[in-house]
Length: 59
Image 1 (cartoon, rainbow, N blue to C red):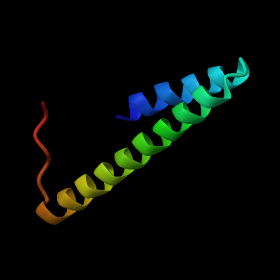
Image 2: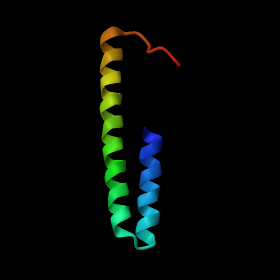
Image 3: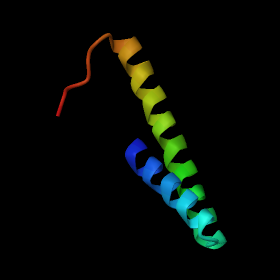
Image 4: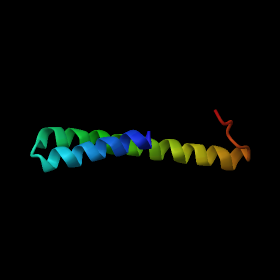
């Protein structure tokens, strides 16, 4: 998820440089939403790890 946030952030920067303001704003908003979702999932995972003391299974 952090990867996709970074992709949309880079897309927003490139679109902004070339003058596509609408696309840049939309991409920046998507990147911001994905970043905050990532932070929320990370915090929940961290709290679950601290409470249970177990490691999450690796896929």
